[in-house]
Length: 228
Image 1: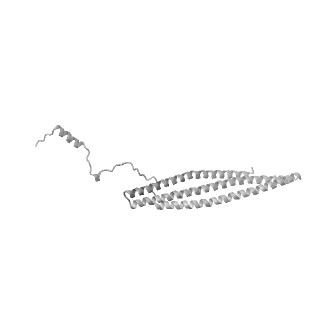
Image 2 (image 1 turned 180 degrees about the horizontal axis):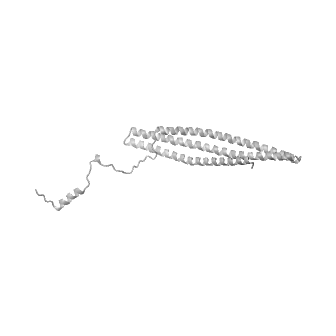
């Protein structure tokens, strides 16, 4: 049987052959569109966050203990400086008396004591400066630990909310409400992490100051040992 096709039907047949095949809905390849709801705070399990939170609490307590110790040593250095200043005044008075009485040997000995006391005062002043910057460091370290705790507490709440949504997914208005709460918690967590990061930069600056003062103290001690 012969079947003649008109030019119009031939064009239609060719168009059908060239058209892409349409797959059933269940076998279509999913589109790779942009995900508009990214997790901007990386997910962590609650136990890891709780361990970090406990470490932050312990760090705050340790920083406060160290701050108190540094402040106590600073006050001790200040008290010793004042006592040495009184001693230097008395030595100068004795030196004046020795000069008047022409007791040259006594005067030389008293001058040596005065110079030693003055070098000790200089050393104590550097030590007091060190204790002050150590106090500042531990104050900043405690502040950093407090900010860390706040960021971790928010992250923990965020983790709990996310887990709750996964276990019992809602739909419609309920899902939108859950997403709003999670979005707000994510925002607060990021803000807290930003404040913590800023405090971390300031903490590093305090650490550098402590190292500089320790180097100054080492130089001062070497000068005392060399008698300069």
